[in-house]
Image 1 (cartoon, rainbow, N blue to C red):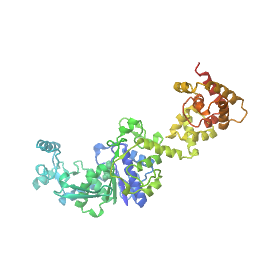
Image 2: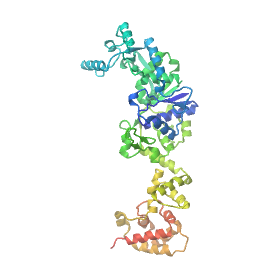
Image 3: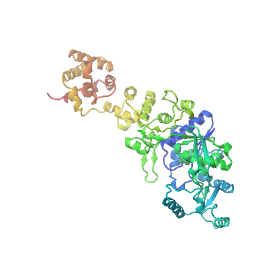
Image 4: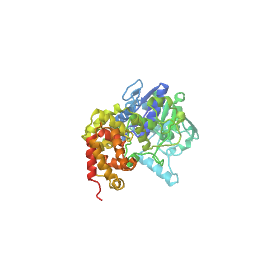
Length: 507
Ligand code: GLU
């Protein structure tokens, strides 16, 4: 098995592209074949500087590695189509000679005129095809001596595919099944342009053949081009090596209504690209999932389940497990909703499975950035305490802010509900108990003394707990409170309780 990922460097790679690369990768790794990265840069008008590097970096962050390609070399190179330019012409000419393609000399204006005339006579989408080509300037309609004269004079031409008439093209797609298209619906696509470059169709088919690609797995947007590709394989006489085609379902907006776009991420304030994209014109940087602190494993796990399922209810997969479990048989036909919250859920799951030790350094860095400090032992105890409340490692900062910063205000609605009744008396008494207790401070002592004081006043500890939390943390919710207090230390807790006591509403 040989597969390829063949992006055009027209901008930052979208999640759909990453998923296409991933599905190719999963399949080929299981089969023990090779994966090629081919850069399809034949449309020079759409070339964006930096896009190729971005594609390589994004995929490498995801752990999608190639065996051959622009950045790896290999026996089938060069892997950038612009560097293969010289070899495409002979293939276009081969088709002209065999009668499957022809020269067309029409200018832009002539093409426009043709379209307008057809529109005026009621043809909704006029095409250059078997019907219109006879009225245009090409080597099928012009006398052969004139064609020769024009070619000799170096007149600009394109080479078009001569779409056969009245044929039915059958595409056997691995995911969609049999797709049947009538050639009457297809036009005479340009294969070779006047700038000496092939178009996508010619270069793609020629390169898949020369690079001995056995399986083409690509986005659904390429399905309409596939009948032409099948006809090209036929015209070249290459049916024997025609790859198996699989067209992956579209990625849809989170609500399922239409195609996913970057704006869907923007609207939610969430990243869209795998890694940071720098706009080559403005220099503006758009952070990716990597910069936002997502784990590549979580992103890959999330992407793998967009349009594919393992056939059971497993959701968590390492890359190796995906390679084992993946098969094209379980790829859906219908589009897959790109649910950003599901990606967050995956990241959370991966975070929870991380060992505390592996998080110590990144968390310490977060503290340092904030100007906070904690001993190793405290950090190691604090991380598991707040970990369940984090989606990203960077969430550590907001989860522990109240640990390092004394509260300055107390939410009035919580104060109104929780700091009345017996609370002020309990609070004062608790301060005394905490101070005078001779036991070694810790979560157990903090909790036991609190329960004792509550019992003395015949109130349930539960009804006082949120008030206590507000007093020590300044927040209405948070991690296990007594653990937190144990770590925070006796004197800091007492100081905070005094501060809260001073802020009690006067009655
Ligand atoms: N260059 C095409 C793209 O940008 C490749 C499509 C294909 O895989 O054939 O997606």
